[in-house]
Image (cartoon, rainbow, N blue to C red; front, side):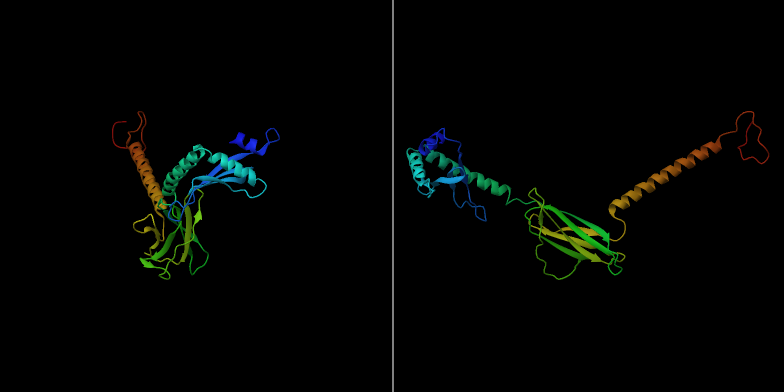
Length: 258
């Protein structure tokens, strides 16, 4: 290809130039193949284009290099080698595009959910709950707040906007300011195409599960330490006095020979 273009342009030994072949597979919204494009470019400018309907190369440069592009197209059409290569690339493009579409646009990744509370400084609504939702695909997701099982706010909830993570997943969040009472439960309900039913995350006023576990572990450790201490003191007090020692009246050592 380079030698052919160099001869037609008459630039052999006259300087540097670049020729490359590029192909693309435009896809429809549902992943079906819309067409196939194959272009021979000279210095990044389209020179010769392949027409898959008639299986021929045509000049697609209508400027100074139009005549040269026509001669190159004729040379490529003279024989079946380059046409066969273009058709093989079109068949491969169709297979690769369908597989790529299934692995990307059609895939489903379930979200992860966590509620994080924060103090607002407002006595009327002292707690602000933020429901973080991340790691999901596709980006359309709906978040609904529930208070003791009842929907908070209007009943019409539309999908919220999501931010790309850079790894083909998305993240978003929804906040709610509340004045929780004893026994209240606030739930972040997440609806997504990857879920058969909404994903629910609950929050209740008081200690979180992590803090509760830490307190329980600390309590058990303290009880065990206190038990070991009392056992040691009891064993020490139960020992008989050392030989040759005469206890004073009113001693509390156990009876026995001195």
